[in-house]
Image 1 (cartoon, rainbow, N blue to C red):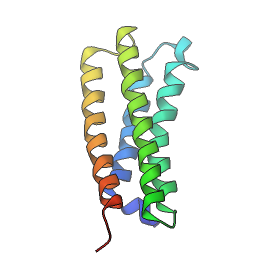
Image 2: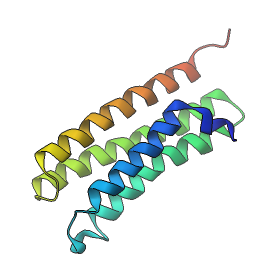
Image 3: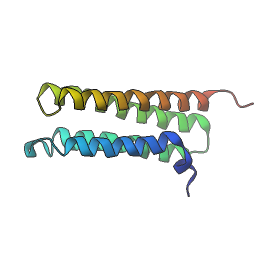
Length: 120
């Protein structure tokens, strides 16, 4: 097992990506290369950046990758809003996804904060 696999935030990010894949399966076929693809890539990017950042030799470097992961998460929030406005995502689906985004954001923020704290 790699060290990043033990991180709860990474495990949650993988579950989050699963949720995005499930939600976007209902999108129109015409969106396969549009919002579907963009949302999936952004969601996968979250766990990927956590994993890549964990390999870095310094805590500030790892924190930078967590910051990039957070940016990908925010992309999903924006894309979900557009999906809802376009009628691809129901209000209930949007609320569920938005709630998952909030949870993931808090976890990423906590990890980044801990990485930037002075070592004791």
